[in-house]
Length: 358
Image (tube, rainbow, N blue to C red; front, side, top):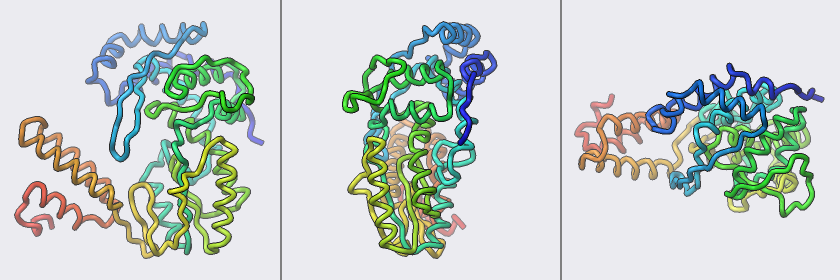
């Protein structure tokens, strides 16, 4: 049994760790006023945070909520700069503890992983198996049970102050509202227990992986499924026996319910891999072909048309448009997409000669 780690709180609140966390929290956001102000007073901010954490008086600030609609409508919570520093400081200490525990085939928000690595792994299994069971957990982040999550963290962390800090962060967003967090709260009063992680926090991304780690172990060690890939709440099981894979799916559903979660009934599909395996925005085929998911192509085309209109009317800089288009083109480049990109860009920018792309 893996050992538990102690004396972690002291590592979280070192000035070295907090300064590194502040730098990480500021990365890519220095143009935004709240971050720029925090960075200008970085030393004061970090020292004050350390004193508050040490005294146990630190309290999370108010989230700024906004809605995104691409690829689907979701509420995103942006934490204040000070809180993001704490989130990064915590993850910097916990990540090295949990990384060796995680299975190889979990790919979201992990060093050296990501969507394209997940796609490559799914492609391998698609080429070597006849069937694939695709699963998705319904409304995963809003339904993460705080007590169960803290219990799972506690399997590796034996530090009351770190667990209390995590509990305080969790309580700052429970069902979208602040909740009182009580140290030592048990697993009783199930329906009354707070749940939900805000989409947008670094801690949410990290803890979401921790929470589904038992599912990974169940599939790999109990069901002994060799072909398994997970990206956040979207996961695939591969096999050559359709009946066995269907039975595994039922057991997965039952296990997920023990985490107070549900497999989405409309996104639970068993199919032959020759029909294509839809995963992380791509569709992989046994012959090695990969294409971009049709819905992603339509969404990108609509967005690019809107942005091109903004450039023509002076609402967007052309260089900004080119940067966004090139970013998506690089993403789509993991599939056989050269002809697709020619069609999209030629149609929107009215490029006269496709041969000039060669």
